[in-house]
Image (cartoon, rainbow, N blue to C red; front, side, top):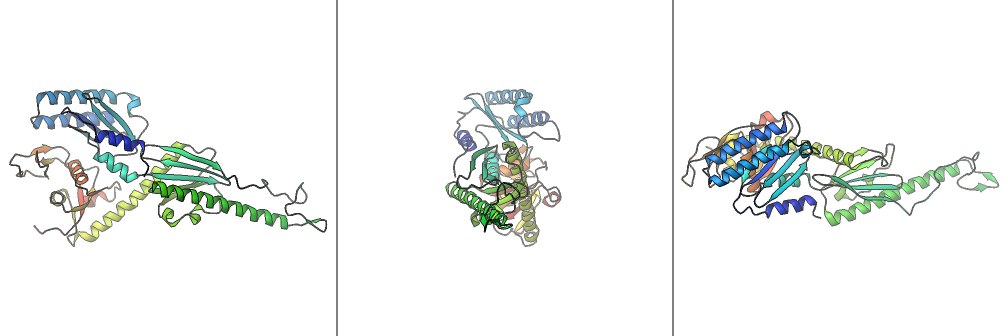
Length: 396
């Protein structure tokens, strides 16, 4: 797959060396409820209290406090929080790091101070949305858009040069009768039939050209999703001409006018189709939870899910993004629990203020899949966290 600007940013972040200085990572939804600034302020206060409890060097804590204060000042600037639905921000002073990424959504608000950028949530979001192409067409024109995580941009706008015809059919009372004359008489119906046949041939030729172009592109980039836009009233369907690989990647179609279609509209429509696809996936995963729960192949609730996660049983972690719960983490092994535990390294556990988000980080680190459920009718069944297991749950 061709690398995007976001891929380059992630590469830069993962290679960043802080030389022992603090790095602030902020994931922040910009939409209501609540003020993004106030939520970030609360998260910053919690994080500073957390690193203070870790008894880190005083210089590190003072630098961390300065990072939080300066981040909050940045958030007060309107341009800093405009132009996206969510914000991902990485900041360090020595050496310098300043990355602002606007994204369509994030799983959970989070502010973390560590000695490296926390990019796991950004990586997972990139993999979830992946690369989408949107093709729009009418008559002899087509426009092709590439949609990444953070933007849409037009890559092709062409007319099919092999096609030509008069713009419309005229009857014998007009200046032209398509189809010629027989015995000196204009042939009623014959010209119109030929004209309509030519229109159908022209449309089929155009659709085949588009389908071939898309398949050539797919073989080069192996994009993940495809969306189709066409003019209202178009009768022949482009999907009928697509290769089966492309039909499997088709997630939606819409009506549009090529003359007025903008990259912003393409981006918004694509996000909506992706959200619909994600909603279907959420229902599918929850159906599996219901089916496998009684057979020992699934767990629900924070306590049982964390136990399974710590023992490497979790195949898919299912998360309620609105659930808040404090818990405990072992300072070296990272083991998580919703109740005090004896850490394998022999040190007392430290309190964490966002146990669910810590579980997401652990799951991503251990290569478990993460499914965040936004459909509110499904959330009561999750009880904060749930999971599909790699092997059956061991009875207590």
